[in-house]
Length: 331
Ligand code: NDP
Image (cartoon, rainbow, N blue to C red; front, side):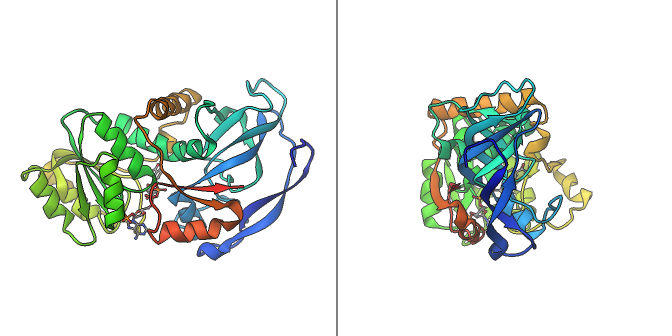
């Protein structure tokens, strides 16, 4: 199916919201790219927790049925009219909206397509667009991590967490990470966590206080949400930053503003997509991530690959905390 004519390709489709079993392997029709569009044959597809939120309805998909997925890398097989700057045969990546990367092939707006350096493997590239660019905006824009800072990263062995810890360490921060088991703790240590807390067994607030001699951390990067939010606030230093960027354990309870007062704390709930709105922002963020991969600052852990048709199994493992590093689907 590498021709540019209208034909059928396989994709994962969601007709009804629910558990991993609602991910169905089906034929979908794919047309020719129109003006400003390109057609891409995917080589590697990144699985992200956001895909679970859409599948379950924590976030609302624009319509049903839909093809999930927000991160992939592939080869351009056809280019629509107009100046796209992209050629057939280019290796490109893409992140974010429109959703639909869980497919053998897809049509994309050319202004969201990112050229991938040839030295980066597709499965690696498909792990650093959404996950790597998230690490990038979190520690370089949202709160700028500097040498001497002490930071707390929850789910430190996860897809985003692994990259965040490596990068923050390279920036000169003292990194405290939380993980659920010993294997993940060993990985987090390798990824530059100076202190690892097993948050299922230990009281992470007490441990952070102990590690920081009572003063707390400059910033908490909290993607776990419900189970950690309150404790994360308690880990902050005076005028510290609470960055709540996900809810793997569920949506955090509403926070009274008064809970920020005793520390004059800052609270933000950012999303990558507000940090890479323009093409310039997108390419700058991607370029910074690629440079860090090429130079070896970031070692990308593609710890789990599944055939695209088995996306349901990938979701099950991600949701059950069985994965570490990144999860990739191969068409
Ligand atoms: P991860 O690989 O980090 O997987 C989630 C991890 O969260 C698990 O491995 C687990 O680690 C931990 N966790 C803690 N409690 C639970 C729970 N109850 N159920 C499941 N997992 C739990 O996923 P990603 O790297 O894809 O994403 C990480 C987080 O970052 C997600 O919350 C995601 O939504 C968010 N995100 C936000 C973005 C934004 O722009 N705001 C962009 C990208 C990601 P452990 O076993 O160690 O506890």
